[in-house]
Image (cartoon, one colour):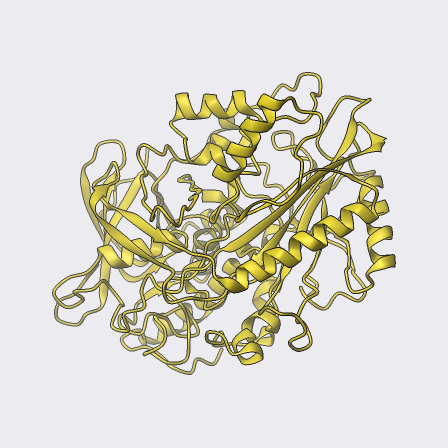
Length: 568
């Protein structure tokens, strides 16, 4: 049972995923009293009973297990995702309780989790750093605004969070972006992946095929940041706490705490603290800011610029799937780094971004990278080994891509549902066209048989799944359009971006809101631009950096006004 909350805290952290779990560790270890509010429950050992696997089957559509999740768990959105795993589906939300809306001409697939640890229980654990290719992207190509710091400023915090979670990876000669990390052990490519690497790098020297850089499993099922924060005795955790709004003092305008509804009893509670950190995930933190408006903040909290909810970011996706009759069966890595009895092994290959790294060389802005697996999905011994990879395509920041609150639809706890508008532009189309070309040429060079190539814009291969019957192909053609759409990358960001100018941003360089100096937003809502990398590691590093400032400023009593040029 969660503890009763009847005290004043130094800091209130809302959300417990990559941002929240990092924040509580940083603040609690610094001696601050911290309250962590999590909308979901804490997981137990029972949730991680290892699955019982039957004999490997040929590659299929997962229709049976997906249908079960829809009918039993009401996951009609969550079960549509392309990279489906029934193991992790239990950690995603009930869509009946968590509605959202979007325009008919801009469908969006919003994948969410409400648990202690958030989507850290359901994500692919690939963690890569960003670089000044990302942080200074606006200076390089003129689109958007730069981040309010450089790689050298965030690098020590990347080191810190990598040491916290434990990261596997390799020395990758010639790879400048993403920068190397701090590793506890090597990653490993298997036989199929090594052969693919040889073919690709010989033909295209600028394309590097490297092993995953991935997080070690946390076998106690508690994110490392929360585990360490608990040890300090300074952390109080309240689960089943659905935060509905941040409260403010009408006289000073400072944040005073939060109001939450108990997810089980629907009873409303109020908590108070010196500092509030929104770490609920990009869209949820934006939703909270918009729902926390009052007479002093009529358009939402911290929204004097009118930019809360604006410049949403995601990654477009181009996906190629094939197989290799020359390598039948299952090819796991020769040496497995800390296999997880519940999730299984980790690993795969990455092809970092190789476009526009040294000036504008392509007919599009920014770029894309690839992430894939070869032979790592069990199939019958005589079946061709599987091969699949997808391009994570950086979207440019657009003012029109935004989140607002629904005027008529609310979730199960009375909070207005998010209305999500993300549309692809011509730059996305040009990049998808290039990524599809690259997918086809690399698969052809490697001697792979193509089963399909698809993207946000449809199916790009002339035929799909040569071994399927006509009914299976028809089902696949329908299903792929329902799953490969904006949102499926699960890399949403933006909506409360950082910057140097209060007129052009919501936050300063340490994620402090310009309007409410003791309110911080440290998850991916703070990102001014996207990347070809996943956001999780940068969320953690940005949070650690913000908390470094919070600890010092709180001790000095300096959180009554925002600092424009922060020096750490």
